[in-house]
Amino acid sequence: MSERIDPALPKAELHLHLEGAAPPAFIRGLAKEKSIDIAGIFDEHGGYAYRDFWHFLEVYEAACTTLQTPEDFRRLTLAVLEDRAADGVVYAETFVSPDFCGGGDLVAWREYLQAITEAADEAERTMGITLKGIVTPIRHFGPEKSRPIAQCAAETKGHFITGFGIAGDEKAFHPKDFTWAFDCAREAGLRLTAHAGEWGGAQSVRDALDHLKVERIGHGVQSIDDLALVDRLAEDGITLEVCPGSNVVLGVYPDFASHPIARLREREVKVTISTDDPPFFHTTLVKEYEELARVFGWTEEDFRAMNADAMRAAFCDAATRDRIL
Ligand code: HPA
Ligand code: ZN
Image (cartoon, rainbow, N blue to C red; front, side):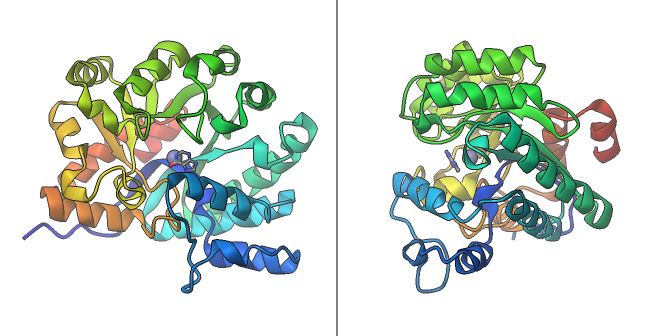
């Protein structure tokens, strides 16, 4: 029998896409308000419907067409934080893409950012959840588009925007193509992460470390196929933002039992647990913890330790970290 994990256990979540956390009913509501026909992205139960990762990205972008104004993003942020707070999350970081908020125009981005920040401040007051933002270009939109996005990030680094990352199709382009954007973000003092080793194999993790000089990796699970890399991650204290349910639903691994998170942890890699795009993957952080406890026999003590590692790797100031740890 696995230990019951208290659903109210305070949790830190480092890998969460703001638009990808939109409840389907919320997106349907916006679509109706604006008369946008996106009925095709939902299944008969009202959930998001997609065939594979690449189709998931298309459905994701179709859902994003309903998010048009700063007010839409304010409401989205509140809806997402309500769900996270109900999941016991006390600290979260969210990927937010200026690509979907003004297309890289700095003036527009500031307006979206103000709306998102207002919602985050309100949620902190009313729900006790702290949110930080990681600006994230979309890899398959190409290196050219990543430059104004990096400039948006650099110009708005502050209390809320603390990090820079990259998401999207990991097989599109090479990390080398994004060094300009990452150098720009690093010079502005932003903390860095990159999606790698979800689809692109261990080499993609090596490339993200070598070319983008990131301190965390989004997913990174395919590092398990290269034990020298696993040792490097452990020695250099690179934290992985692991999203087991996402990986299983998208077919990176067939089930939790074959997921490498426990093997990575045994080899002393810092692993943390997140949901990625929870409604797309029919998951919550409570469900992830329950499944990991059942399959690997992890206890509340294990989850507390992983949450402490998450806070040590969090892109926030020391005062925020110490308050939450
Ligand atoms: N991987 C890459 N890009 C993404 C994801 C993901 O899991 N979710 C949203 N954008
Ligand atoms: Zn992700």
